[in-house]
Length: 252
Image 1 (cartoon, rainbow, N blue to C red):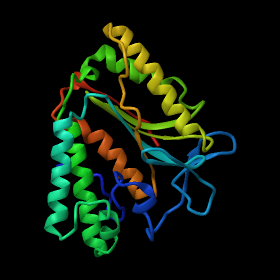
Image 2: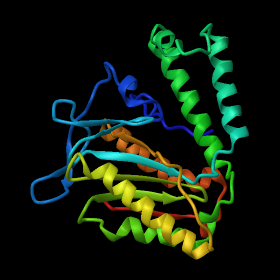
Image 3: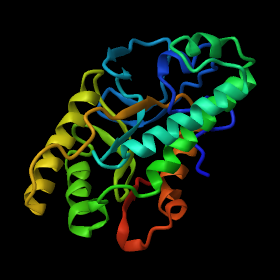
């Protein structure tokens, strides 16, 4: 089973507005992003922007962000229903109703149980993603190279990219952006460009990526190191051959 939880961090898959209340933050500067902006962990004492869509998207100038996008067919309806059933089974086991009030009821759980739930919830999602549902066209070297080139093209210019992995049906990356507005704008740019090129290569039309991705501001150096390792180990956990993925990690 995959794990996205650092020793002192709550799960990265949970919505940020709930996940980090009372969590200790460790701010440090890592590296220059530009002449006057440093690549660093999220600093709760500095300005940030929160954009509310289906998920909340937090951004902060220079803060390293863990980002995931997935292909439209990567999570079939039956798999989503299975994941939701697994979630509901856990909630029922711990006496929590599977209703709209569950978020309120979860906050009443001891912190250890709450973290256990989010760990389970997050890990099962990533297990299903790594199972390789859908056409998995990113497994093809010519297709994954489109994403690779796009991610690398403006590195050290519009953003600083530390790590990424192009899996058969999804992408994980760690990057920092010079302004609070740049993160969502750049993600839209990556997805639009790569979808156009992938459709052209395949002779297909329509949306390629799921409309809304997941992003998380990294809270500590420990979590940053943990996520770098998670990205690096993802192909091994999924049982991929060397030709079935593209990976990058910046020496720091």
